[in-house]
Amino acid sequence: MGRRLVPLTLDNLPDLPHRCGSCVFWELDPVSGEAAVKAGTAALEKEAWISAVLLDWGSCGRVVYVADVPVGFVLYAPPAYVPRSTAFPTSPVSPDAVQLMTAFVMPGYQGQGLGRVMVQTVAKDLLRRGFKAIEAFGDARWKEPACLLPADHLLAVGFKTVRPHPTYPRLRLELRTTLSWKEDVELALDRLLGAVQKEPALRPL
Image 1 (tube, rainbow, N blue to C red):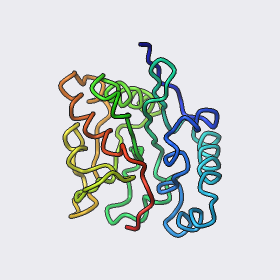
Image 2: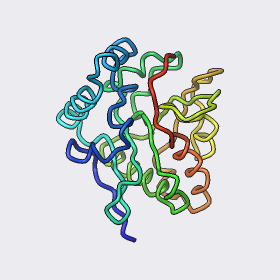
Image 3: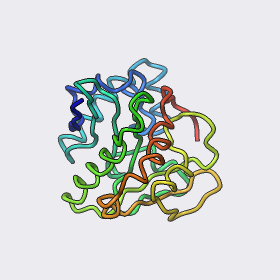
């Protein structure tokens, strides 16, 4: 089956899982995010965010297709475009890094190397744009799928803790290391990217 990775745009935004396509956990600050959810405008806010980042910064995600079926995605942007990032006790993200917001591969398509290809594609994109690393806020007490990725899964695929915290450590992955990844990281990536297989929801920090 053919597989392709396509930059995220407003055209293929509907190919994200429904809740992910209208989730504004990262795209708005906590107060504005809650207000958008209550007002029923979260999907419009998501579209507005994607549009603004595309116009100002460029590609901020990838959608993975297998035989033209959308099976996963990754979303990333500099922290200046991610209002929620300032709400974390371990912020800010380093100036030479882009924030990994969230990522996902459908359970039925895990174990096929899609996670590795997806992260390597993002790494090549960001290296061309002059960034050295990707950072993420992990959840050290992760128990169920949510918008944050579990810290131990991030560590398993090569992220290193740069600012520890009992709940929300900030972790960093040097982009050049991803380009030489071999198949032995695929299992760990499957665990990481499958960690949000349920529809994520807003939750307070």
